[in-house]
Length: 198
Length: 411
Image (tube, rainbow over all chains, first blue to last red; front, side, top):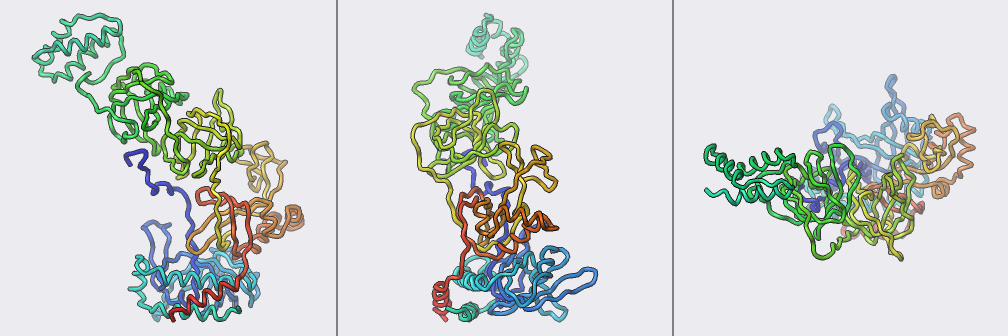
């Protein structure tokens, strides 16, 4: 930076907090994800999972039906909950590090519609299977109107990713890592939408 | 080697301060230094000049009069770290912030304007506002992203006459960068002072955008009138944590007749409400006139300390998220009441009759808002949207048909 008029935009954003967006992902696509990585060396650097449709994902937002909740653990109590969308099941966890979310889960009575904000985690079981669970930041009871809006929102976001990720670095990486026919996700979207009433 | 020219130059410099000196003596000293001691001529000139200057108690001058000639530049062409010679007009003088600084202010030429600093140790002549000067061998450096012209003991300053008047270049607000700029804009907002030393702060907007401004308390300065258009000559543009701000203390502010169409930064953002931030719900505000800050739980105002006679307010602070981008939103009471379906009075009643107090209002807000799709409009400052209108979005069946076509189109 040698010239007062040549200030790039790069420096402008320094110090301004940018929140990681919450991706809209159907349960079926999330279940296929297994690649996870961290951007930067810092302890606080965000970590991401790579979605098969070609986008990095640090956070998710979804709406669905809470079908089951289970309290587990003695000293480190936590809740496990299952939230279902038109394509599959999200596994939601709320532990003592998320006391507010835990209290929210405690008050919910399944079955009900819920909106969840949380961070995806990738686990590998001893037999090599990969599991994705959502560490819950917030879970609130919502109505069907919001659930249906989310299905439209998620369908649109998924189609957008399928159509625009080709050629982007994350898109190329997803294509190499997963090698899944995008037509499969297109079909998933179609079937999810078909469950809504016109 | 002929030293008569150099001796003449030195003689003139000293004589101009009212101390006639013998040229022949100077010449002899120069010759001795160069011929006997192998000193480079430029250094010899400097040595002799300084010696004489000290002898007569004159400000010690700098490196060889003719030797260290640096290229004359326009202010727009300055770059960090350069030694430069410039001719420019002192367009503003500001109070010196420290005894180490003799004078500070802004100089301008046709191309640009920069801040300048004259160190006390430079022993430089006093500069007058409105006059043109030639600065030889000044140094350009960068402080907080803006260039500065530094006048040190090696700089020569001489008043020069200048033809024609200086026509300052007006910069559109959207094109501002750290440094010094002239702006023509309207005061669109006035904020409560966040600090004792602030006389006024707010937003100035023109056709291209809006920027904050601040006026620090200083003798003889007056507040700007909200709604009025001003031409502001030579304000300092500071970069504060990535946000630009105009400091008007250096500026000449001229009120203008008429009005301009301002771009108040009206923006809209649609997305899911994903996080309700602390400080939302029922809040208590500081009663001190012009403060209005939200008090902490212990009724503590960061400026006015403990306040027992607060007033209540409702607000929403939180994040909207469309899956690709996020936007922090700040919703004031009128919109908040509509969104949450709770009036300020109802919220106070709820807080008074509930063991959790104000937290209960926060929890109700969270249940009512998180997960909802909202469309907010308002003024955007950096990544924050100050919401003026907000609506709850609903399921739209016609979107379903479109999406089904899109998904099924290439099955």
